[in-house]
Structures are given as structure tokens and as C-alpha cells.
Figure 1 (cartoon, rainbow, N blue to C red):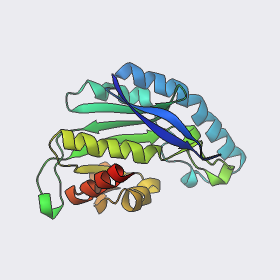
Figure 2: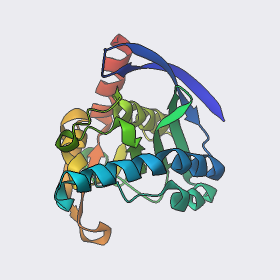
Figure 3: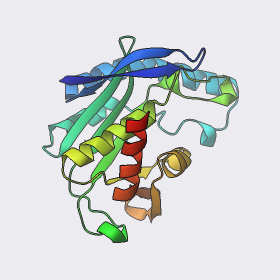
Length: 210
């Protein structure tokens, strides 16, 4: 497993903290991730119940279990990435290099990188209903940037696709500048979005300027 150094920002005071993107995440790593996150998920759930927050307003990945996603990493087309800081997993992403192809007209039918799962650690969730602001900002954006990089390395020119949970739709559409392409009945009617080659180039140019 290799790592890429970077910095992430703490919400409380705006300070920048050293972090690493880990490439080549393996099934045992996801077991460790869930071991770190399970107690936090439980604590969030207890607070949501205590505050009487309606279940439709709960974080929609609250029920996820990364141990159950570990077998996917045995697939040749699958890759795992994690963002680690302060000796804790701050976010995790699983991607697939097949069998997906873009639906956008300019590159229709050409391969893209598919983000199968992307989640930030429960302590980084912003949940106003229980007064939780989240410890670090930008974890999801950094992992998404890594997906663009992987797409480039695979020869896909930065093209990325995914099905978004409803609470994440605005993030992917407005922040990541993905194009919504309709709801997919085969994927629980989730919204399918894609990042075009042009928008991928914009992301990478902006990163080079920062």
C-alpha cells in the first residue's frame, strides 16, 4: 500500500493537519475501518433518537458496514483508497474500472471510472440536528479528486460516474460539477451522475493552481 501526502483542514480552528491518501486498500483494512467507525455510528444513532430526529433525516450511510464491502476488493476491476490523519481513517472509497461506460454525448460509450462507495468517517459528518459540525472538511472532495486521477491513469481522461444517495446529490452536482443523467430503477432509483472529460480537466487545472 502506497501513500500520497497532503493536508486537511480542521473545522474548529481552521488549522491544517497532515494527512495521507492510501492507495491499494485491502479487505483487512476495511475491517479496521469499520472497527473504528462502528462505535461512532452507534453514538450518532443514539443522539438522533434522543433528539427525536425523523429517520428520513438521518445520515443515509448510517447503516453501511465496510466489512461487508471488503470482498469487492478481490475483484480485478476494483480498487480501494483511504484518507488517514491523526492515526484514524477519515474517509474511504471503492472504485471500479469496468463494466461502466459514459452516457454523455461527447464521449458516449467510452469507459469511465465508477465510484462504487465513498464515505467519510462519522465524526466528520455535519449533522445540525444534533449539533455536530464535523471535525475535518473536504474529505469527500479529496477522495473525488483521487478518483479523477485514477481515471486519468486508467486512460479514461478523468471521466467518472456514480449513483448518489439523495443527501449527496447536491454535493456531486454543485461541488463536484457532475452532470445528472436521471434516476436508475436498477439501483434503488438513485440519481446517476457523470463527470465529463472537460470538467475533469477543470478540476485538475484548479488543483494545480492551488
